[in-house]
Amino acid sequence: MAQALKNEKGEATMSFRTFWLWVPGVLLMLAVGGWLALDRLVIYLPGVVQELRSPVGPNRPVVWASGPQTADGRGDLPNIVLIVADDLGWNDITLHGGVAGGTVPTPNIDRIAHEGVRLSRAYAASATCAPSRAALMTGRYPTRSGFEFTPMPPGMPLIMSSVLRRNPQDPPFLFFPDRLLSEGSGPEFDVAGVPASEISVPRMLRATRRAPEFDDMGLPASEITLPELLGRAGYHSVLVGKWHLGGSNGSDPVSQGFDESLELAGLLYAPAGDERVVEARQDFDPIDAVYWAAGVAAVREGTGPRFAPDIYLTDYFTREAVRVIEANRNRPLFLYLAHWAPHSPLQAKRADYEALSHIDDHALRVYGAMIRALDRGVGEVLDALEARGMADNTIVIFTSDNGGAHYIGLPDINQPLRGWKATFFEGGVRVPTFIRWPGVIEAGSEMTGFAQQMDFLPTLAAVAGVALPQDRVIDGVDLMPFLTGEVGGDPHQTLFWRSGHYRTVIDQGWKLQVSARPERVWLFDLENDPYERRDLSEARPERVADMRALLQAHDADQAEPLWPSIAEMPVNVDTPLGHVPHEEDDYVYWPN
Image 1 (cartoon, rainbow, N blue to C red):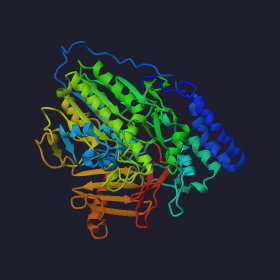
Image 2: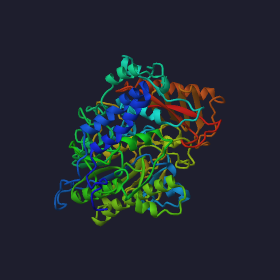
Image 3: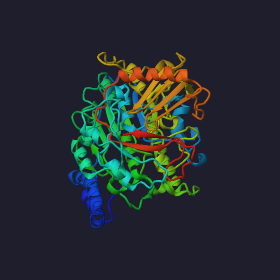
Image 4: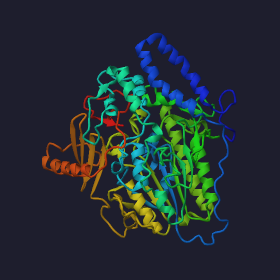
């Protein structure tokens, strides 16, 4: 797979190819749909314009800045390699069970746990990617900075709802276009939700004109990030992979403290239809439909133009991460390797797919092949550290931005946890998290206290000897005494999550979830019911009242959202898309 990924004509994937794929569908809609067609044209056209405005150039090599040729003067600061998977399910690694009954081994990810510490109660800061990453970069709750909702092009929710194959009893997508037209804001701000079938074109046009640009929905430049802090200690910081925290007004990776970056700038792992990959297109998944219709395989170096990776994306990011390690072997390095895998679309390298011939289900086999590539990449990074004599002086952290997604239709990815990405049930926010630091952290140890990914910043700042900012609240805590066993107990007695009307708190082992749509309260005793099967909200009203008060006090101390949520997606807590729901299933509306 050394040659460039190209289309059927041997040309690098370009935006005009995507444009012409859109034309027949747009014309057909105009021919047969009247106002409905115009509605869809208004929704789809921005994606086409974006493709034309931002073409994908041919592959070109990335030249990483080289550090010193010798280690003289390097000091004793440990290197830091932070590996973040995207939408990794709790059960996707063999340490927790594994894909297809454990028949897709993940020895390299498991190795970090075996050679370090397993954080068995570590949580993401949100149940979707971007707010979690904001917390990871700042050490603050995402709501503290106003980064409450995942950035999304305004038309995407409507596209999703228009292609969603729903069961008649399913709750509808809800849209809130008037949130863009009103001056109201804040966690209590709300307007009437509109089902997709009832939204009018003029109303959506008015709202769309008021919507912020996708790149403008970013982490404020005033936030102090992990690479900025580590830079004060002399670290060279590099991002390889997904950013999703903005691209303008000082929110791009380089402006936010990275010395170099190679950023995900597309949605596919390889051009659609490439013979060296295998695809599983989920016709019931609205997100999948958007990705295949508008997606390309693309990356961006710094703030430069997009270009095509020359090999399967997961392998590409791995290869470049290894090259970063080589270039920086003689100076303190912070490498943030933020893989796209195993996020949809389901697209795997053919060799990995063929290695899993024992799996009959095609989608599961493609997904397992994606996990296989991710694990192989982790192993290559670990091997690169070993080969260059850096392993003993490197902290390696592995985690995921949230749990596995319900919309890919695979029922077992978060087992035995309940729920998915886009819910605050354990399957959405409790994530595999392992940290290895030879000679400092005991191999095979476990930290059982409650922690959240916002703790990484104060922990790594303490390791680097950098003082935390004093002009703002840092919600995370230094985990190192807990990781080494010097201190026992919980790093946090209380943890919070909020996405609009949907709020959650864990306090002293009790977990309360409060939702306005549907109007529900769930109370779980995680010590005795870690899989959230027994709702105790009616049996323990006094506990509910106390925890509601905690939520209210926390909300009063958070910032208003930087942009409004304009859509809310119904998520079945118990059954994934593509499967018939059960009458007793719970669901939540996730604001995004």
